[in-house]
Image (cartoon, rainbow, N blue to C red; front, side, top):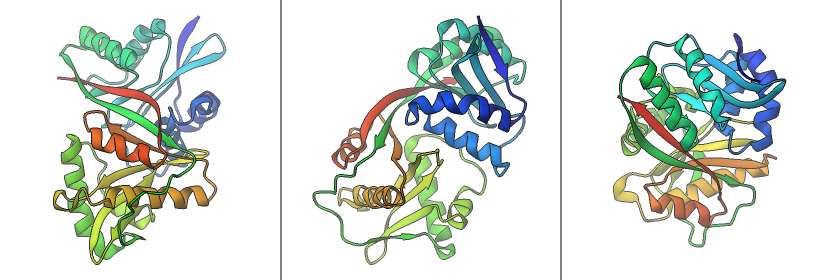
Length: 277
């Protein structure tokens, strides 16, 4: 029988959910990375954090997570789990901004939420998850080198990160994001005489890491900087012993979907944002 097991602490969720999530590590990289970060206690998120495993008897068949103020994250799960899940989530939050997950799951959860709590829902960004296990070197790599972003790069990195979020059409970001990325050696700059592109490695999973915040200013695009930047950072992570690099692309942007496939990233699955308005 399907039931919702809400976990009151990150350690409990991590222990119960991780074996199931690891059965499809690339597909579940976002939840795996967040689960590990929450377990350490070093995170910028608000309270209450929502952590739930969807279970059929003694078997995990899905997961849900929210790190306020962000959207509810959903995995694939049985359709019969959706109504009890929304009931449980509504006992924690009076409002939600959006649902992100597989198309059918996210859409139906958003519909059920609006029926219960009011509001309307609309389909927003469709994203594709890619995974890399073996890098294909760029055919025409850009000149320059990849280096860690330094404290002196803070203002530039903030500005470019703001432009990145504008490009992807969201204002969602954790306070002090760029500062934490720089201090943790997670943010990198491609430099060719001067900074040309930005990239970060975030959300480590047991065997991988997510490549994110890829940004090149409009006047510097179509010169290979983003492709070469992502390729080099991916190469470094694989050389360190990680099995995977992951990234998300906007399906409305055919350029990004093409260039990453050219260096070895392979499609895993699609996820969709359903917003509550």
